[in-house]
Length: 251
Image (cartoon, rainbow, N blue to C red; front, side, top):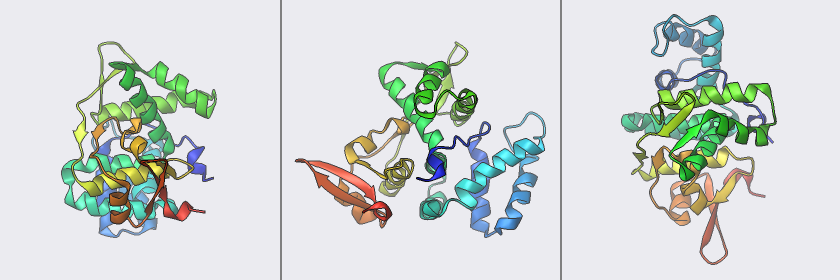
């Protein structure tokens, strides 16, 4: 199993505008050896800082930008390439695209979103304490879990998919974004499969995955998904249930 699934990874709050720049750098064809210094230069005047960032902050941010857009794990490169094609065509939906790449590169991001989504299905507000307690059931009672979860939650707030409530440490759901383009929705399904060690999932559950709480996905059939994607296959089980799975993980 890839270390992606056991590492927490997120080391500070992340702003989606930084990922816009990473996508542009990828599209420019910049070499991997030069990209880190280019990111450092960009961050000197980037949004999201009250004062110029420290070298440590720039390092943490650059790590995330490189792992998602510039030099992802080999199994994530095709997702990144598909994401870039959509990035060029759907500039207003770039938050969704960055969400997909972050969730695949850092399954912890996806897991935090899933915990929040499940809680928001039951109640109007969610607290950081509630989220952290559920994360510790998966990752153990590590000191870093609470801090890293806070970074992800504050990232959600800066991306305007969560809102601060009047109570500190308590959050509300923002208005969801409707996804109408099928290729965008398929990218989201693929990212969800890549964020799980098994690499498969029931289509019905994937379309309603709580990790996608900020979005409304269109209804799609398994045949439609597999016909539009070279990397996802569909398997039927039961009377009318469909299982999606990554082709390179089939036995």
